[in-house]
Amino acid sequence: SQQGEEDPQALSIQEGENATMNCSYKTSINNLQWYRQNSGRGLVHLILIRSNEREKHSGRLRVTLDTSKKSSSLLITASRAADTASYFCATDSFDYKLSFGAGTTVTVRA
Amino acid sequence: DTAVSQTPKYLVTQMGNDKSIKCEQNLGHDTMYWYKQDSKKFLKIMFSYNNKELIINETVPNRFSPKSPDKAHLNLHINSLELGDSAVYFCASSDLESQQYFGPGTRLTVT
Image 1 (cartoon, rainbow over the protein chains, first blue to last red):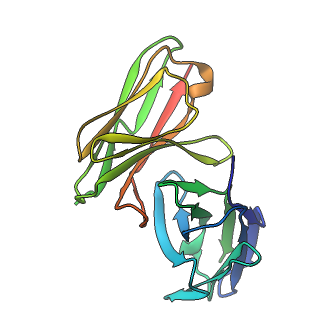
Image 2 (spheres, rainbow over the protein chains, first blue to last red):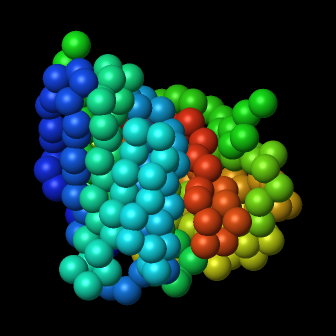
């Protein structure tokens, strides 16, 4: 069954605005990862945050992790048209596999 | 240089046929995976191999058989294809407990 669930399912924003999406999961994790998938392409890794970390940054991306609430958020600042994609969270729960959520589809309007 | 490659990119076939998808990685990773992504974009792991040894085998029909001839290759053979097998299949590789690198996907359409 799915481990992570993203919210919202879809998000439409204007170029330059920030985009925030959330991920909730059910069991204890080793780490949580965010991936991006452009239409018709494979997934690309964005950020990995370990269970003992609370926040991580990479360029215009900011990820937070709250293990007490079993949730994570991904913030994309100053969005660009090229950020249009589906974003997935994935949890590593010490069982050698990643469990993916259903994703958030982000559309950035020019 | 392609890190994880899959062939073919598109595969259209009829019900009942047998087909294979090939995957190769040049990243030197020990672990490789097969995922299935359905029409709702839900991505589910099917198999994982670590150093040519099967370590994950999710509830997948036994018509699906992975084969890893060496650490750099993980192929997926599917027997007696069914309509419900239509999906995009992704290969990925990684070091354990680390980020995964995905191939471009193989879109399988069963008619």
